[in-house]
Image (cartoon, rainbow, N blue to C red; front, top):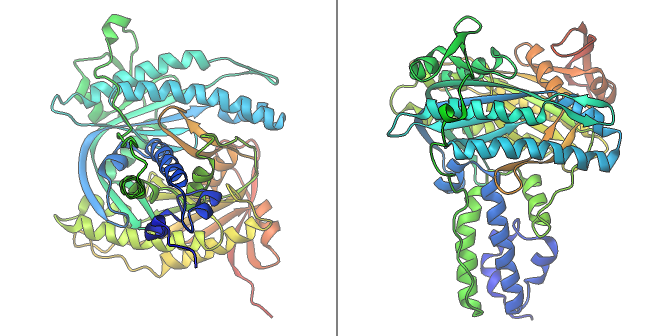
Length: 514
């Protein structure tokens, strides 16, 4: 019988955080070199996860599974990038070389924007495709809106570098739209120890998104409330009704220096100065206490990818054709603003139950619940089948998950919030096609594993076309699942951003087994 390894006492904690070969090597009586290698790997993984999570997550270090809510005040910035689809198409024909070239181009863009955001005191909460959600927390100086506007102006000036990108298919122009709104929002950490999510709730989140969507490319658009905060600091002109466009007629001196120094993202980790097994074990456990809270916010397949690629610190970019699902969960998220004091926790716990059941439906079918994000109504849940792990029947898996998710939502009874019991329902869209999959962001700081491209945008539009508890699918999905699922034609439908109408279907139910 082999002697027990010191690491076996924490085996269950290491199981999902070590590469397969390293995990296998720790059994028996591993040498101190192996234990040091485990420590070094975990230290690298800690840094990666700090970059993969927002500052709020990495600093709070909640116990995995701990549901927490907090009302926060500040200024929200939403950005949207125009031209990425054409840039992707210009590179996709070149295969791996094209993916590498596109990654260089998009990394240069994100790095420039993230640097400005960080130096301006913003916290990049999430990437949604090529869009960004940034929060500038309210400070003692009450300058959060000023900092957000200055950051927005700097970002638009930095976009001049991406105005004309030379590709084999010609020149591609990238343009950015920025929306800024000041207000309050409810942050909620929901889920289980296996899978947590940090969400923003409240009408001001939707208003911030509306501010961006009502803006113009190459401009910084403000809501009425944000404009009132900085009316004596900047010049502006009226945009669409209720919105204002900042005039960028400032000199460099008038725009001024960055308001604060860059905010550090990485927490210090201990330096290993011993080769005593017991002391190395203690330092490994200390690292685990830091890693586990952050790891719970990463989908299991993505976490596995990060663990296995930690030594290389690089995930190759690719042009796969995954199946994408968007779920718009409506009713419960909008209840945040009418929650009576103390009801925020009840709201978050209810949302947590639904989220956990939806995640289970996705994971059990081999999919990835990437994130819960903002929407003009409710919250959007973004789901992938086919990345990072592909299957021969990803369309079938997505269809099965969609039916299960619809059942979860339809069988869910929402609690009364603010003396009102909300009507809860969902809208679901499924589509598949070419995408760009890569680790996007700044390689030295904030970044995420992400899926971008027109297929993602089209899926969101299919979801928006759905009615209550309806699953809308593209023709490609219908053909892939028609042997096992009843689908009804919705006819030719014109969607925003599409040159020609798309033939859409609704997924009704699984066919009866004979």
